[in-house]
Length: 375
Image (cartoon, helix red, strand yellow):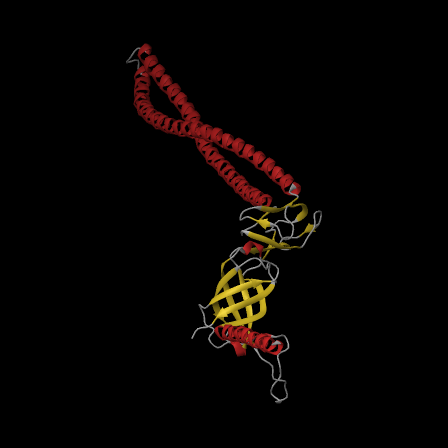
């Protein structure tokens, strides 16, 4: 009886192990299973301060901390930049005041010049017209003098012959003296008008010279405006540098590495944090060449991460590398001599994660995958 029970137990165990073996073999035929699995990221970004440099006063994140897009994660001391901005503002205000004063001066000069030019031209035209009138007057006086001189000579001869009274001769003589005095006065007036005309000419020349002063003022104002523009651009750039003293995360993800400490003086471009963005994580599978048959892009994948045995992850095959991992080794095998040990090569397979809490994953974690094979 005992022998029969023992035989029965053996048969049951054989059946159980047979079923388990069958299921295991069947599972291995339907799935490519491997533990050469690593969590990787498409884009691990090293973040640094853009253009700004200085002493770090705040580091707001530690390794492993979550970070939101647009969140400030580090701050530089911006005192020097703010002092520079204040100095630039003072220079700009001083130049604005100078520009205002120069414009007021130029406005006054233009007004004065306008009056001077108008007055000089009016005086010139009046003097020119008066000279012409006086010249005509002198011409008429000369004509009258010639006639009176003839009368005076004729009357003098008649007086000598006692043909006319002396009073008659004195009238002609007096008339001649009046005309000569009149001509002398007109000639003096002409000289004065000519002097006045020359002064008007000089006034016009001086006004033209003052135009050059205004032109120089315009050049100076333009130079001041250019200086103001350059300082404003520098001030705008300094304001940007103040903004750049705050390091902002361009991604939503988590901090993978912190490279510096508070108090360190860092140049622009030096990495401060390394951030791994969400949705950039994937599973890198180094699949043995003997298990590659039936594995195709789009095949579903079950993912088990060693660090989180209770978490379930699923994915799909998104890429199968056309070369083995050994081809990209730092020291690839030399098979030209025909002397090598045959080992199973591994093909990099990229798996996109479609289900599971990816916020728990860290680059470099290991695990196991089961890739559903295609028939």
